[in-house]
Length: 107
Image 1: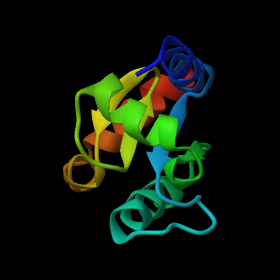
Image 2: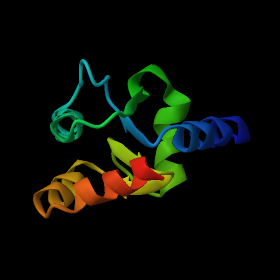
Image 3: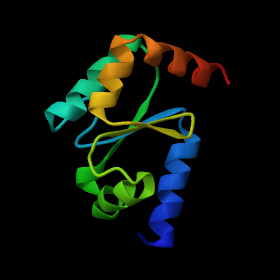
């Protein structure tokens, strides 16, 4: 990953309380896992941003290195990597995601 790509990802993660690096956008997810993630966040009714990795090869490859996580989507809350679709589903079902999001949005 180039230093420029790392800087761009750093900026996106730090400037947004909740950001999802995904295939497509929140209005038009381009894969089932990205869609699951969007549906969960929409259910929580919280503000979040998305980054379409299909539009930017550098970000698509760089985010995997940045998080040391091989798959997309990737969710960051309050600057911290939370996980992908499967982890988000698990946290949501356990009621933990709501708490994580509330704490992040309150800070």
